[in-house]
Amino acid sequence: MILAAIAIFTMLLRDRDLSSDEHSRVISFIPMFIATAAFFALFQQQFTVIAIYADTRLNLNLFGGKCRRPGSSRSHPVFIILLAPVFAAMWTKLGRRQPTTPVKFGLALLLIGAAFLTFLPMVGHVSVPLMWIALILLIATLGELMLSPVGLSLTTKLAPNKYPAQMVALNNLAVSLGTTLSGVLAVYYTSDTEGAYFGTLGLITAALGVVLLLLPSPSRASCAAFGKYSTDDVAPAVPNAPHLFREARGVLHPTSAVVAGRPVVAVKNRVSSGKRQAYRNHFYRP
Image (cartoon, rainbow, N blue to C red; front, side, top):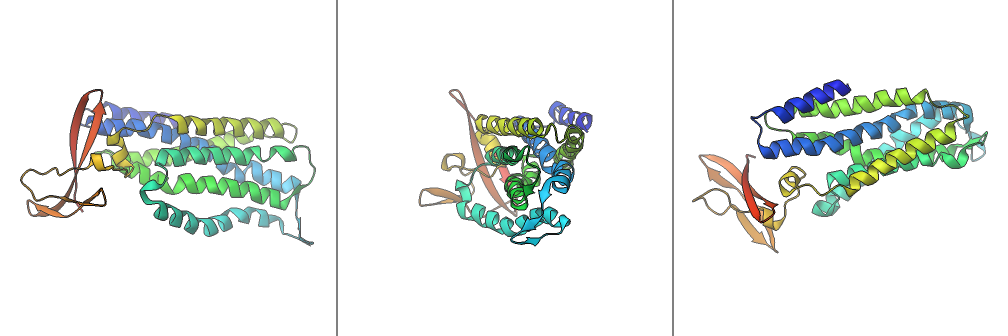
């Protein structure tokens, strides 16, 4: 899978038919690919290490009753059902104020790292409360909701026009690579080494999240792929055509125009490089 990913990235980056903007978008996806693989390397351990941990260490007594053993594995889908609408409403409410996709990926890595670090207070305890595992899975689910829903959307936005399927394949390869790593890493888990195991993986993944958060912001051209347009980035782009944008409260909104018999929305991105400004027109046909 690693070789397949390298081969696809190499093919995309060496293709001279792609514009410089498309090349930059492919390059900007590389950190997201690594982040996705790292996230799922820990997240998918709920089916390996965490399952073994729950089977051997979990105290199933809860509020005076006893839960069935499979009940601990049901926390994740319950959290997804409860929290997915909350996240959807939150992103809709925030609109353009919501974090960029790289920030969401960085926060996801921090959360999954925090989930593994939450195991540490229970190292050496023979019986672990059921609610403690539920807390760990809750933190992991929050991370998944930060990363997983936007992963496929990200690839389609960053994909060059010539290679949409290959970019989607890269996203699936990242998930598959992370799932494979979760199985590879699981062989190093034992009850004697659980402190070092959870602590090391948690710290490394959280550190990757911090690095992702500290990466320079993408260029304005790349920001277009994330749906981030500022007032300075947008301008009419079709000569002799009616104004394509109207100003309202200081924000430019695209409006419809007909060019060559078809509706067109034109967006002009400005990319600053030192004292020079290069302009590239992007036409989006609804």
